Length: 515
Ligand code: GLC
Ligand code: CA
Image 1 (cartoon, protein in one colour):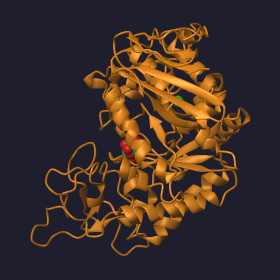
Image 2 (cartoon, rainbow, N blue to C red):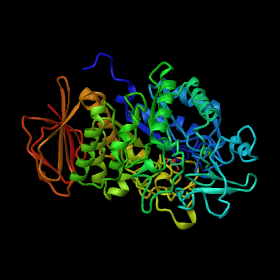
Image 3 (cartoon, rainbow, N blue to C red):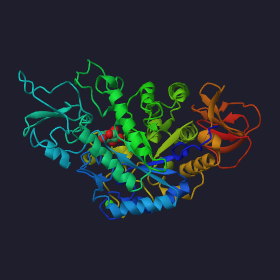
Image 4 (tube, helix red, strand yellow):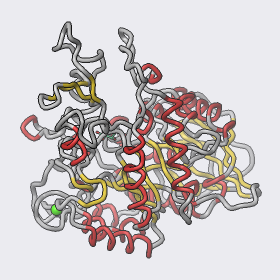
């Protein structure tokens, strides 16, 4: 064991909150910062260690806050800086850390920086975004063949004022910042310092893997995909160097400020590079497991990639099943039994787990009628409001809000779940309590045991502390003998009875066993 204790972010369970969807407190049908503060009781009881807030900054909301018009202020829709300070203080007084979202790749087109940049070719911020001249032979042809997210249209838009193209890897209203300009770097560092000085514990860094582009802006080869061959578009080495500077900045503050990068690359080997020599990201999201189906072999391959690529580098893994960009795992996996077993898996692998608000309730995605679609990327279903009570307004003050309710809101709201110790909510609470009580689960080594087909079995160990985890991915009961006698600490299907483990797993049952 190393001499210094593991930093908080290695031992934490982080809980992602999409502020629009958590709780509304002023009757406009959109969640706000005060709504988050009022639900800290829920989070404290659940036992999460940290929250990550998706963007609440000034924004025209074309991408619901991921289009930032002022990095250092709260959008009035969510409240104001006082609301943020109150939330931060109340969270801290309960021992809950607060991470916020930082969106460095692009700003909103309404950001004053872009407004100035686009006004002329020689203003003070002319070089803050990525501008390209038109091809004299074919002025209507964009500078290269890159496509933007969501619409899959060209990643370049024409600006009449400047008579030039600008790059946007996301919506046209989200122009990419020019990270090769030292003034941009300095300004963006300033936004980090602003929030660090305000006391935040860390950042989730949006689309961090490609903030520097390949200098020549080469065409993507036919049929290639930037998620698998990111090096065609992005200057990965340059980007990692830029991340090292961010790391130095965070490390210059007391108190283990941490960053987790959204490294949206579907190769764990490449994701590993973003940890540098332990001098770049503290943590990177690793998305291949999020896209793995509910299948023991497929999951084992994803876990093996992490063990092979991250462990040798001493790079601390992360695990995530649901977030604001993808259908919830309860919906993807198609049954509550699977979603429950998946919770045991997520929270007992080696690394920091990230929960997405509402997964602890076992919420399904909302079904969105076509006249209620609001997101250009089709992600509304997983962003449905969280149902807190069993009344028709589910604690929001009005029945109808910016999005419809999750499909199972009447049976899986927080009020019903709290009163039923067999609920998904109580299961999450028990797993989190088990983690709190076990260094093996939080920080211990990871080793597979032999197991029947369709089952994953592994031991987590730290000194004398040991836990054995069995996950049955099949819809059948399976005999799964284990050496020695173990007791059931948590079962995804049974209540907290602490019975001895008798050698059989129920359909889609996952258990945490202790000696
Ligand atoms: C990230 C966010 C996503 C957003 C995109 C553009 O992928 O998770 O919600 O739309 O970046 O900022
Ligand atoms: Ca509101």
